Each structure stands twice: as C-alpha cells, then as structure tokens.
Length: 170
Image (cartoon, rainbow, N blue to C red; front, side, top):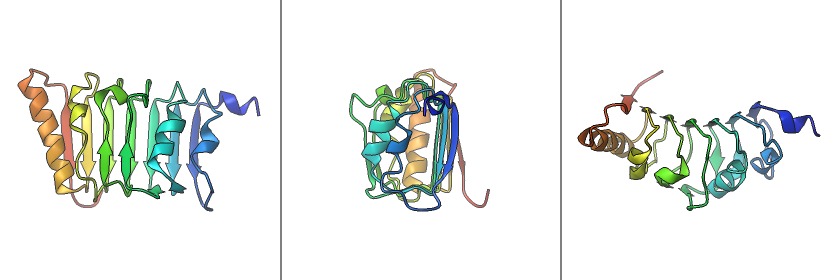
C-alpha cells in the first residue's frame, strides 16, 4: 500500500460499477495526473472533497462520468491548488458554481459534449493563469458564457485568454 502513495499518474476506466468510485483515490497524495472514464454513482461534491486532498494534482480528466446529481457547487474551502488542466467530457452537469479561488492555477479548461451545462462560472475570467477555454459540442449558453469571459478579459487588457469553440465530429 505504501508504494501506491507514490503514484503520480492513474488512468482508471470503471468497467464495473463501484459503490464509491471517487473516494478510492484519497490515499494517493503524490498523484499529479488523474483520468477517470465511465465512472458513475458519485456526486459532484465528492469530486471536490476528495480531489482537493491531492495537493499535487495538476491534471484532472473526467470522461463519460455520470454523477447522481447535476450541480457542482464548490465552497470557499474547495481549492484545487495545483490543478492546471480540467477536462470534462460527457458529464451530466447542468449547473456549475465556482469562483476563481477554487482553481487558482488553472491554465486550460476543456469541455466536451457538455450539452446541459448552462454556463461556465463567470469568475473564471478572474483566473490570471487561465490561457484557454475549449468547448467541443457544448450547449449554446455555455459557448456564450465562454465568449463573455474572454470579452471581459480583453476589456481589461488581457489578451492571453483564448476561447476555442467547435461543433461537429472531432
């Protein structure tokens, strides 16, 4: 078990349903990259409470992970200190409430097939490290929120943040 604590990268494909698929990663404190595919039976709050305990986590990819709820609400204490890349693909996420303080070092946000997502949190425009927001086959309202975020940044003189929007096969 002690060697598992030294893991830096995990790609986990949930072929069989787990009762608690998220909390099994709480012991891997050296983890830098985590990719979960086809996980279900979790709640968005578990993502926050478990993965903020991973102080070195730089990349989090959630692909086709279906939560039991459709709201991801982060509190002031939910801080992903080292996270640089967040990828969400086919989540059943409708509402995402977060601030720039929750992702202080985020460089890249990638959203794929977020058909129900109403908007990207507007405070993401205040993340000074954020360089790109990519939306692939997302809702029109999510696309519009990304455009609003980059326009707000440009008005403040920040031309670093780029938004990429695509619809169709990729």
